[in-house]
Image (tube, rainbow, N blue to C red; front, side, top):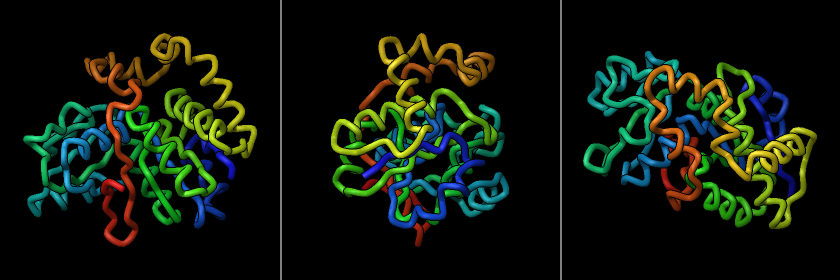
Length: 238
């Protein structure tokens, strides 16, 4: 079994030719995949990811709860933004939530035909590793990045997950995995200091949203694996 890293959605067409029998782990640390994990941990029945604002507005007109964000800011028609703190149990418990974000839901849409698509974050990284090992399949980590460009935080997660999987019998599939592993080894002694130089932390700080950074970098705050169902187009707990 092998683990590979796709650093941006723009590169994913070069990986997707053979993803039908692989596990694709979509990651958007700041903040979409972390937020989805938080919502499901707070008993949301399902997340319905959509790529466009128009789709989200259509669901809103039908009475659905909607989380919508573009360029780190909550959309004015939405019930929630893209903060894990928005999706409390009293608001989302036993409800389906429609969700669209700048990068994360675009990546999900791109990989939606994969054999198995799951949602990864530092908050559920050990559960993701257990899931992958249990499935005994090759893994592709799809980093959502920023507007189809590379970012540090998602790639860092790729290295952290690859290190866990390699420790449990996986092998590196590519130079990309080696780069991500090197990033993780450098960052591991002080992840917060390493991440402070990133573009996205600066974006969050500029919009007074830095309160979620520490949470998004904290490992194993939830013990669940969100899985995308191709038939229903919904994300539920495995």
